[in-house]
Image 1 (cartoon, one colour):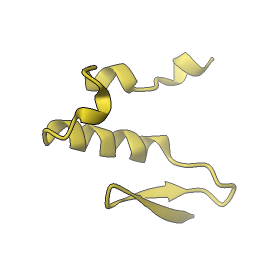
Image 2 (spheres, rainbow, N blue to C red):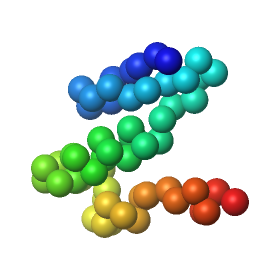
Image 3 (cartoon, helix red, strand yellow):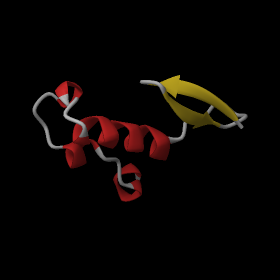
Length: 56
């Protein structure tokens, strides 16, 4: 497994090149909770959360 950095936080990347969505979600949540939430465009943090049933 490889890693890349997103806003100075590690994100896991599988050998097939798939990025770990859980890591990305946790980073987004940390940013929102710290007050750095401009990336949300006024939406609530849970509005960007991808639930596996949404993908079916």
